[in-house]
Length: 223
Ligand SMILES: C[S@@+](CC[C@H](N)C(=O)[O-])C[C@H]1O[C@@H](n2cnc3c(N)ncnc32)[C@H](O)[C@@H]1O
Image (cartoon, rainbow, N blue to C red; front, side, top):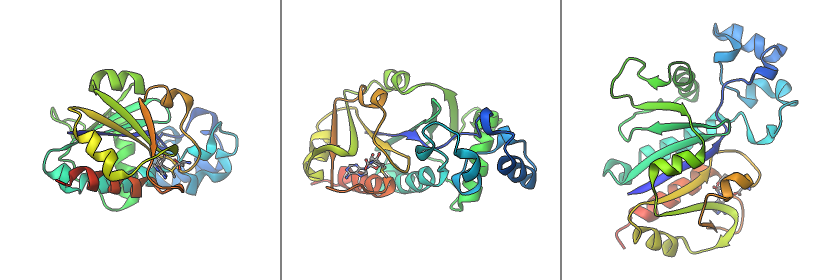
C-alpha cells in the first residue's frame, strides 16, 4: 500500500487579510457566497493576492484537482493499493476515501472543496464521509500514518531511475511519498525536515499531476 501525500497543496479559503479586497468581494457576491467561504483562486483573485506571503505557491485548486483525478482513477487505487492524503498550505489535512468520485469539472470541484471546508466532511451528514478535513500539520499526519519510509519527489532531489525507486518503495511495508500540489518553488524547510530522502525523476521540473501518474503507474507494475 502506497501512502500518497499531496503536500503544501495550494488549496485554502480566502485568507482574512484580503477578504475585503474588491476582487474578492465582487467574485463572492457573484457566486452568492461570503468571501470567507470562497476558495482562493489566482484566476479570480490575482490582484488581491499581491499582498499575500508566498503568493506564488497559493491559490491553485486546479492543481490538486488534476492530481486527485489521476490518483483516484488509477488501477492501483481501484485495487486497494493507494491511500491518498492532502496537506494544505494553511495546515489542514484532508483524508480522501479511495471510493470518492470527484467532479470532472473544476468549478464543481471547487464547490465541493468549499463545502468540505465549511462542514468539515463530505457528504456533510454522513457517518462514513468520503472526504474529511481537519486542522492537522504534516508532522501530525505522519504520526497518524506511521510510515516506515517517507520520500519526497522534487526536481531538486537526487536523480534516480523511477523503476528503481518504486522497486525499493515496494519492498517497504508502509511507504509514503510526498508530491507538491502547488505551482512553483522548492518545498518548505519544514516539509523537507520530515522526509528520509528527496528524489528527482527527471532533470527538469514537471507538473505535479505528471509526476503523480508516473509514480502510481510504476508502483502498480508487477515487474
Ligand atoms: C510544478 S512542481 C513544483 C516546482 C518545484 N520546483 C519542482 O520542480 O519540484 C510540482 C511538484 O511536482 C513534483 N516534481 C516536479 N518535477 C519533478 C521532478 N523532476 N522529479 C520529481 N518530482 C518532481 C514535485 O513533487 C513538485 O513539488
